[in-house]
Amino acid sequence: MISTMSATRRAELAENLDLVQARIARACEAAGRDLAEVRLIVVTKTFPASDVHLLAELGVRDVGENRDQEARAKWSECTDLPLRWHLIGQLQRNKVNSVLHWADVVQTVDRPELAEALNTAAERVGRRLGVMVQVALDVPLQSARGGCAPADVPALARYLLSLGHLDLTGVMGVAPLLGEPAAAFTRLAQVAGIVRELTPGADQISAGMSGDLEEAIDRGATQVRIGGAVLGNRPILP
Ligand SMILES: *Cc1c(COP(=O)(O)O)cnc(C)c1O
View 1 (cartoon, rainbow, N blue to C red):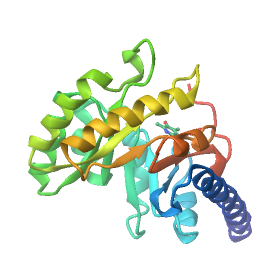
View 2: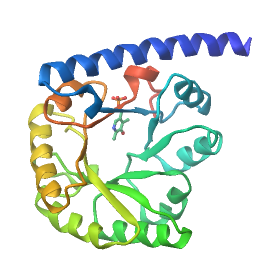
View 3: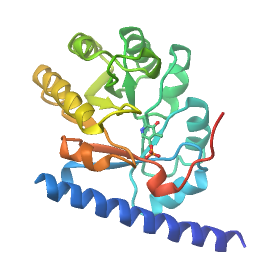
View 4: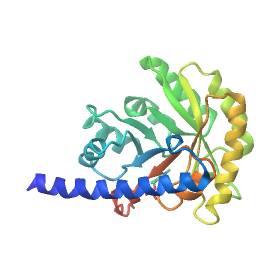
């Protein structure tokens, strides 16, 4: 019974992955970009560890989670899998030690206090941590959604580069709920260019979700974070 259910789920995930990969390939072609430049991160929040196992079997190598508690529990059931785990949700400073257990990359660094806390936690456990600067793309700026104001990104990037246990890999952004995603991704690409001038290795742009991956790839995204289009509808959370 269980194996029949898991075979059905595996087939569903395989089909969805194919569709998403075809969308990514078409978007790369339309933008004149090399497919190898764009990495798929499958956002597994609210879905069980059994799905993560199936995704790994199907070749997925990057997963994204937005809550420490949920992610850490799921990760502990998946430690045998060759996956990179990305934190893509807001992070409170009191969670950084926990995040160091499971996250390979924290994509949502948006303030110096958080950067400092992550560096201290990484140093304590003797490892390095990948980080990205989350850039606020709402106009006008709405701090509730998180993200560093574009004007403050160079200073935060410089600060991250001064910390010994963090590897700055690029910038991340979430298109505003309202308005044109393309305009937001254009602003993100401009900020990404400034960060890349500070440190050429920080060349990653994490942008684009199920509804706007084409616009993101057109504006230079090197990582797309796809949840619903691979895993199906998420239960509505309170
Ligand atoms: C949930 C989430 C995603 C995935 O969104 P979908 O619309 O399900 O593809 C991407 N990025 C962030 C930051 C998220 O929280």
